[in-house]
Image 1: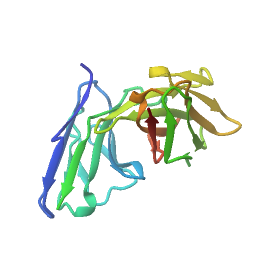
Image 2 (image 1 turned 180 degrees about the horizontal axis):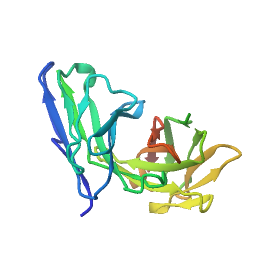
Image 3 (image 1 turned 135 degrees about the horizontal axis):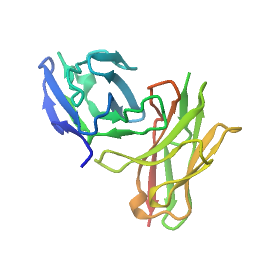
Image 4 (image 1 turned 90 degrees about the horizontal axis):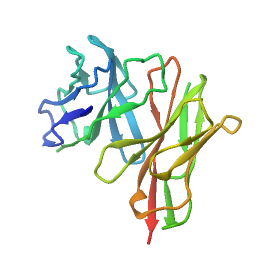
Amino acid sequence: EAQVTQNPRYLITVTGKKLTVTCSQNMNHEYMSWYRQDPGLGLRQIYYSMNVEVTDKGDVPEGYKVSRKEKRNFPLILESPSPNQTSLYFCASRNPLAESSYNEQFFGPGTRLTVL
Amino acid sequence: AQSVTQLDSHVSVSEGTPVLLRCNYSSSYSPSLFWYVQHPNKGLQLLLKYTSAATLVKGINGFEAEFKKSETSFHLTKPSAHMSDAAEYFCVVSGLGTYKYIFGTGTRLKVLA
């Protein structure tokens, strides 16, 4: 089944404790992206990657890191989480025909992160 | 530059009555437009997308949207609401030559019995 998977689905942690949220897709998509969802703000892009070893900042990159060593994986790293990073996080991937923006993104199930 | 505005943060309808969720967009490019639905504690599901082939786009679960360039709108409609339609709906704009997906702030649809 074609899908985007994320782990963990739920995470409660404390301020300053490094964490990684994994994201994997099995659709051979070049493009992957991370979003955070907050009430009343919709989804905002954190980072994106157009292909392996190529990443760039989205709209809200502060406090996050990413890496893209393999096409299928795009982990999100919080080196020193803070309470304002409490949010619902979505990973997404997109068709290799990236020149056509009509191709929709496929989203993972989400990771609900709470930073105390 | 691109942007999208969902004009209502909350919409309530009675079961069996029509649904209208409003979305206006701004785009320097020929836009791509999408509607996604998010049910409580679930991920995002694509409802429909505008691909320039037709201005009236039909999606899943009886939803449709009409692209109106002159009004820069892409409103989502359904003739008859069902209880299972209660969810949050997001309008998204993208554009040829850009990788960005710009989300609206969402409209929460409530369906009353």
